[in-house]
Length: 160
Image (tube, rainbow, N blue to C red; front, top):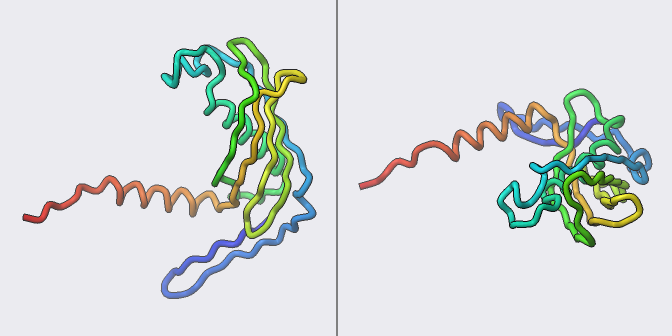
């Protein structure tokens, strides 16, 4: 799969093109599983005083299922990043519980993948939602992130 990314280099527009078709990925399903450990809880992460799986761990499990569903379609150097998500909780689970995430690709357009996601403990629904992920080229993305971090951390000069 090749993705679309346009940028200017030496005053030339450089564009990579998407070769993968929506029919290849729409409908694919990925799964991910975790057993909740004490450090995975909201209380351990300082979110609240409840020893249940934290929201960020549920989201990470969902993201992992999304990635698992499309991994075979990625070329070397390509990956996806989460751009947006919605999450609705229907239940909670504590330490020692095994939970499973499933992600099904609903659409692929303009480098954007939209997934329907669910987390279950056996047949009981824990959370559901939607995750939007974007294709990126790994090296370019990391170079851009490093440059933006350097700029953000640069000391501000004071004007007298």
